Length: 238
Image (cartoon, rainbow, N blue to C red; front, side, top):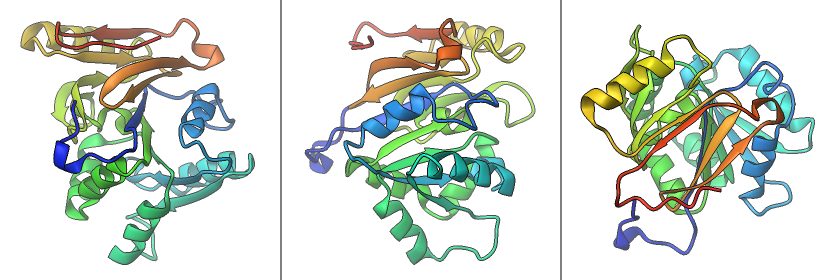
């Protein structure tokens, strides 16, 4: 994906798509977390957690905040389903001061519908162009692409994303029953390229729209990935 010339700024565009998390990953800083935070090039980056896909479940928010705050990082959470509801001004300010925006997993369709209603999709695009690191797990991974492999409609299907990255992404590749088979069949049927898939504990780092690096947690050393590129795509994956 190439940034439109009229919107070009000197910042590199970084998006990190994480295939999934284990229970242990949710409670401790992982190699993927450290890698994401390092992209901000700040000693103490401000983190914004957007938990829309999980329905802003308090336990998930508290768990995320505790995980990063206990390691000394500044964390804010943006919630739409918990009172007091944020004002437009508060939402603008939270996104503007974030160095890293982390999007939770859950129901992708519902999340994108809420984001559109509150113009979060447009604000995230603006934040990306101004150097904010965008990342997320599962729903928070596939949302950045043209298409995502999702079960948020009750069964596996490809759903539209934000289009910040070209192609299609599948999370939990090899971790959830039927996920790999469904994704492979849909790719063969619809001939979609480029296509990416990542298992739990595996993250794909895209820099300026191109796959740059694959990062794994220690437990996911053998986690599955799928990378299928067209002739015009030139990966820099390590």
